[in-house]
Image (cartoon, rainbow, N blue to C red; front, side):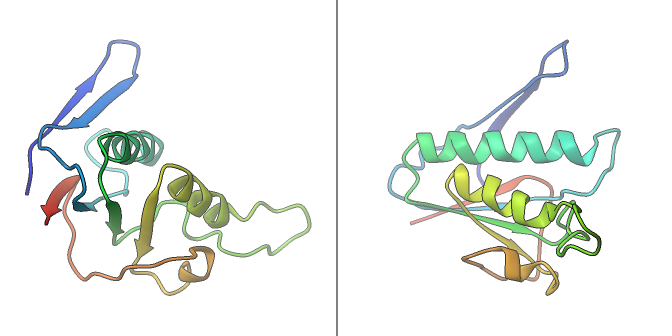
Length: 130
């Protein structure tokens, strides 16, 4: 598990960045996206997306996100006209910041074009691998 800096500003904005060099390395981020400890799923998701972006900007070769609970994962298909398919949009956000996203939920896997499966997770732990 590698060190990272996490800061919350007075207006609610977040800053998060790796403190370990990740250039040309595979990075695994274990993320808890369930609401807990006074943090909403929206805050956790936003911080995770920023962190993934910071890892990619730091030239990580590949960023893999492992999330046993995927917020907004219950909306993987359209059940009524004009219903949003939130899981698809979530997958697109992960892919836009350059991550390979995975969920342990088989319901949501069809929304992601590339998946890595894992059976363990912790809150925002980062493992940097050669």
